[in-house]
Amino acid sequence: MMIWLRCNHGREVSYADIAAGVEIPDGHRLRQAVRVVRVIAANRGDRLERFMPSADPVRRGPDRRRVFVTRYMRSGHGDEFSARDAMSAARAAMTATKDMHRATTFEAANPHSIARQEFATMAQAADECITKVAGIDTVGPQAVRRENTSLLTQMIADLEARLAEPATG
Image 1 (cartoon, one colour):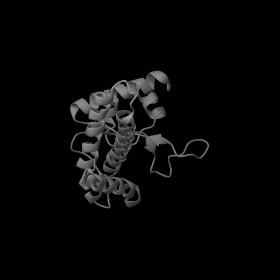
Image 2 (spheres, rainbow, N blue to C red; image 1 turned 90 degrees about the horizontal axis):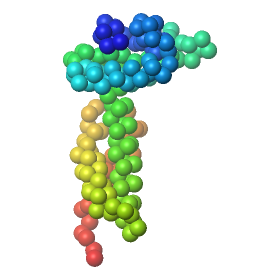
Image 3 (tube, rainbow, N blue to C red; image 1 turned 135 degrees about the horizontal axis):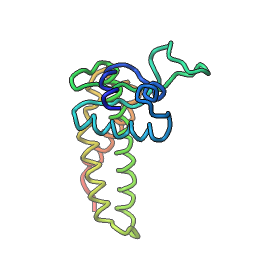
Image 4 (cartoon, rainbow, N blue to C red; image 1 turned 120 degrees about the horizontal axis):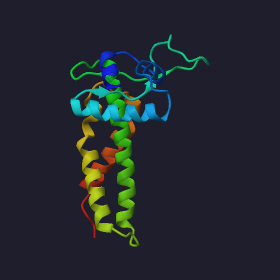
């Protein structure tokens, strides 16, 4: 599968295309193999993008729905679509980090928690990660949609304001 995807570098391919190209039936085995190839590609410095609806209006399924496609991108051969995929992955990671911060902060403050200190350490790490990427809205309008970063920017500003307040105790 890796050889087939590398030969189709930069082309939009669906699960059906991959199944036909590598002669693995479209099902669980194929999806598992795609996950393995994604890890191998990352280790090589390449990228197998996430499956997203095709931007090509011609690529429609039998019921006129857009087909979900991916692209294998070799290292150094990205374009605006791979940048969009990377920003989408970054947004998803920041959402997960925000959820982690919320959950670990709650557990760190819970007197009945089984590991308050460990959760406090994880909350601190998530807090530092969120603060570190505070400049995400400076990437530029071509990569970041402004409506998706405003919540993150506001959350970071609130967090920095809380950290700047003098401790009362």
